[in-house]
Image (tube, rainbow, N blue to C red; front, side, top):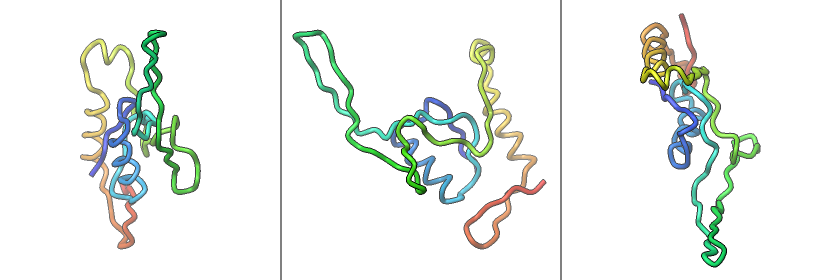
Length: 117
């Protein structure tokens, strides 16, 4: 099993991706996620025509590092280029599918997965 993430992966999706990766449930592929823990609220100042988004929750990695602004780093980086976006191709999805079809994930009875070729 694999999970494909990118910079658009944020908030609750990142909660899932982080637990998926830390729990060794499979491969995380793609680009680093957004780095937002969600729970924002907006403070509006209509008299000035402004508003601010304020996050009310701080999340940390298991090792104590701050999560906000960092996000989840994939196990395998699959960058997406502007040309691929312009052409409408989804190279990340294609490479992820190819990788899963050629890579065998094996379980070592301790909930850890490793790649064998």
